Length: 213
Figure 1 (cartoon, one colour):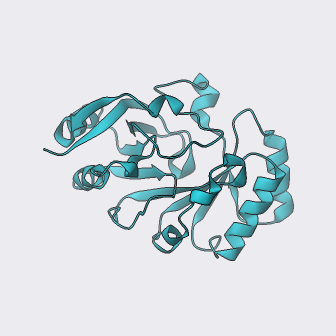
Figure 2 (cartoon, helix red, strand yellow; figure 1 turned 90 degrees about the horizontal axis):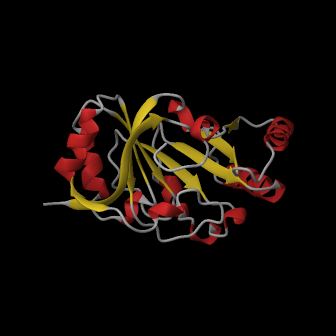
């Protein structure tokens, strides 16, 4: 029976991207092969419980929610993540996958909205970005950048232009939590004149930076 190592399954308010604010069931996997400087889920690097896919779906179903997010850690680092997404896709859910962009997304089911997190220089792991994933994004997928400073902002704008991403996908810039002033990022976006959406992490504004939210 197919299993995954799951750190937590919880019901909360989606804090980011196009479903921000909606009640969502989060499935957080354990483990991640990289170490971003600003990671806010380091507690998911280790531990967790081995669960089979039917157990996971049984818990998800109990919340009677419309929105489901598979996150981590890095979900795609587990070989059965795609199988879980396929199983969820057979049900009447709106599903998103949060992935760091350094593992191939080609097998992600078409109905699943991929949130591709492009790593900036400030993350300290930008060398791991798999640029081939940019050609595998589909209509409705979204791209996210966590911005640590002005260098990250300028790098991200250049990246978007070089890869012609602004006209095809929703693009989100998030200030690194408690590292970059909201007003600074807002000013840079306004001065750029580009169709970039700024977002903050709503769940942290409500509950602070803690597990299970």
